[in-house]
Amino acid sequence: MEEGRRRSSGSSGTSGKLSERELDNILKNLRREGHIGRRRGNTGDTSVESDDEDEETDTNINANVDWWNDHQLELDVLDPSDTIISGLRYPVDLADMEIVPAARKGMVIDEVTMRNLNLHELVEAFDKTQTDTGHRMLEYLVHFPLRDIKEINKRASAIKELADTPQLMDALYPYFSSMAISENGFTEYCFPQQGDAPPRQETFLAARMYLAQIPHILSFLRQAKSDRLKEICANLEHLLRKDKVRKFYESIIDGSDTEIMNLHPETWEHSLSQQVIDTLNRVSPILRALSDAHIRVDLTTGQFRLTPRKDGEPINVHYPITGLSLNLEIIRHHYIDKDAVFSLYYTMGVIEAYCSLASLERRLFPVFVKFPSLEQSDRYVVALTKPADPYLLLNQERVVPNDYHFDAQTRGLVITGPNTGGKTVYGFTLPKLQVLAQAGAPIPLETGEMSVADYIFTLRPASKEQIGEGRYLHSLVRGREILEKATPRSLVCIDDFEGTDPEDCYKQSLIILRNLLRIGSAVTLTTQDRRVALEVEENKDGAYNGAVPVQLKCELTEKGVTFYYKVIPGVGKSIGEVCARDAGMDEASLDLLMKQREF
Image 1 (cartoon, helix red, strand yellow):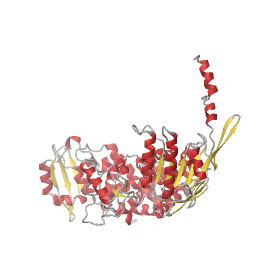
Image 2 (cartoon, one colour; image 1 turned 30 degrees about the vertical axis):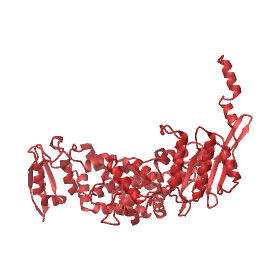
Image 3 (cartoon, rainbow, N blue to C red; image 1 turned 180 degrees about the horizontal axis):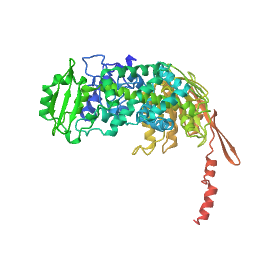
Image 4 (cartoon, rainbow, N blue to C red; image 1 turned 120 degrees about the vertical axis):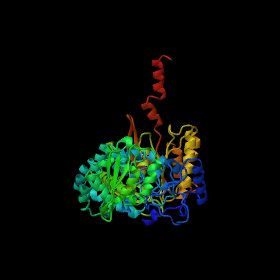
């Protein structure tokens, strides 16, 4: 776990073909162009430890996720519960997250794959959280799956305990429903910025209601038996014992902090005047004791009073605030432990997200929902019996389960079959299940064993989002990107090549399949071109060793096509003529249409 927290530019990991020098040049160029800014000093946390304290860490930067994807960097994905256990806060914004070279802790899922797998919609489908924080944490767990088998099992055991004790979840949910404060509202109350209007009274009340639920939730967590839930419970109790957190917590619960919150907007200034700065410099010893201070504001006289306790004796100090205001951020910086308070806030979200994942078993009944057996392997292997797409199940659609099997001999599936026969569903169900399994969640299947994947890549036909980029070029660019990054532990799912010339698409489908087999990645390739599957089946020169052609079963009858949605060996047959007839686009149907229109 400690290795996951140590991040610096001096670390040995790199991503793809980026060397340390290339990474350094990229960062410097982007910083010079204004795309990123140097990360400011921390606020007292220890979330990043440098392996070389004398070396400047160029990886501590503000950046957005698109920039990270373009340059093969990964967010330093710490399990939120791991972050909480170490007393650190989960970042509020992606821009605040640490950027490190290479993927060393979590599975890498880029934005293209997130979109192709509809992960945002998948989260929405099984989201049972009732707070903004719970929803954010649920997204975090699914969008950044783990890769450490011990951490996956630790999280899964916590979620399984919640799933196996529904009375515990049922007892927790009423408290979550009372914690209705947004992340922005919590930040607005706890850490107002200089120049902001004072927090609203309803924000204060919402913060009070949120934190008031913690003792009740703790009382239930003390009954937990899994290591992860025990750790979360112990950390919550530890945080509440911290002096600055305890005072902050008590000031909200008993309402004594309202005098600070009721500052009128007219008393706030966008910047501290020199007079106030001079005053603060003169009383710096008092400010250092502010953690033990009581603060009172009297708007009628235009004064506020600091009453610090020094050696048990109160010292009364009065400062005029007419037209001025002491920056409340300074007071709060000394008055509370910012990181610890945010740990309290996000811990509640993690627990709620765990409950949401645990509820899958109950919601998908009577479908089998289990925690698959996970293992570390030098190549991606999987054996799933009767798995199903969780998104389709949650939307109450008919699902026909189909098995998956990848081992040292079987590395590729070339999927053919009729349109609307279920090719894409079969090709893209496995990566969804892999994501959920490495997030520690149960998945719909009868039995299952999986290895941990380092990357999941997808390639689908270009959509309207690729403006100015042709379908064929899009497939080529994405294919090159996949081949540069994929490893034997990767899962790659391709949904056909598209382009103007079918011959080009046929050739490129075989080219990318051949090279992924050379790398050793596990591949599902869905194609409408039977020639691809026939070439793989023939396998003249052994270039497609490990690839197996499969098809979605269907049956042609006098009444039309019967779809079975079952995967069977072999190469699927074209039913294009039948589809054209059913759509009224065959020659006979169109001749009749033209006669009716008198052309």
